[in-house]
Structure formats: C-alpha cells, structure tokens
Image (cartoon, rainbow, N blue to C red):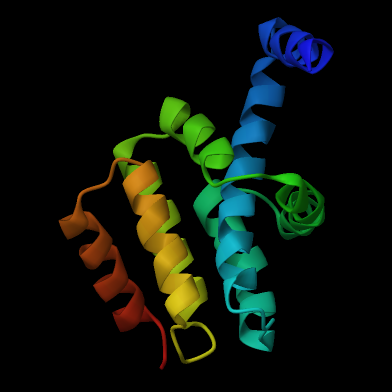
Amino acid sequence: MIAKLRRFIQSHAQAVSPEDKAHQLKLAAASMLLEVVFADETLAAEEIALLPKLLTETLSMTNDDANALIDEAKSVQGNATSLFEFTSAINDEFSLEQKQQLLLAMWQLAYADGQLSQYEDQIIRRTADLLHLKHSELIQMRNLAIKTTQI
C-alpha cells in the first residue's frame, strides 16, 4: 500500500511537458465521450461514426489522430475507477466554453442512435456536476444537441 502511494506521488511530482499535458487532456475528453458510448451497453453504428467526428471538431485534431486517441482511451477508460479521474484534469485546464463543448458532444453522442438511455443521461448529468457546470448549461447543451441531431 505504501509502495503504491509512493509511486503515485512520484508519478504526479515529475514535470510534465506541455505536449504530454495536452495529450492527457485530449485523452480525458475522449474517455468521457466513451463513457457515454458504452453507458447503454449497446454500440450503435451512429455512435461509432460520430465519435471521431466529434473529437476532430471539439479537440481540433485529424481523423487519424482521433481514431488513435479513441483506441488509447478505450484501454485507459477500462482501468478508470471513477469519472473524477477524467474531470479533475479537465477542470484544471479547460475553459468554460471548452467544458460546454465537451458536454454538447456527450449529448450528441447520447442522441446519435435516436434514443436517450437513462444511463447515458445519468453519466452526462454527473459529468456536468463534476465539471462545475450549472444546471441551466446542462439543459442548454442538451437542447442544442437535440436541435442538431436528427432524432
């Protein structure tokens, strides 16, 4: 137990390059989007097609980089113990607008298959809370996602 704690502290005490930090933020955002995709335990074709598109738009990356990030996020996401692991990094670095864009992307993924499951809704609401977004911002992003998604 003490050895694990020591390794954790040492890994977080080391200086992180700006490139690594940016990659970790993108990885956290991609992992949050994957939480929505896997929430209802069905992987719809619409969600699979939309995920790289949302990453390229939201995080300003190429399609190839988005697909590589998705693969990496799948392995990281499976090892995560809570949403807090992802949202704490996002809270430290993302602006309010970036948080809202992430939340909008989560809603768009949730509605991509034409139906919102209670689990998708729950994860998005919990994420909004962890990102310190107001309830009105949550509803605003949901309404915008509904308008932009063909249901």
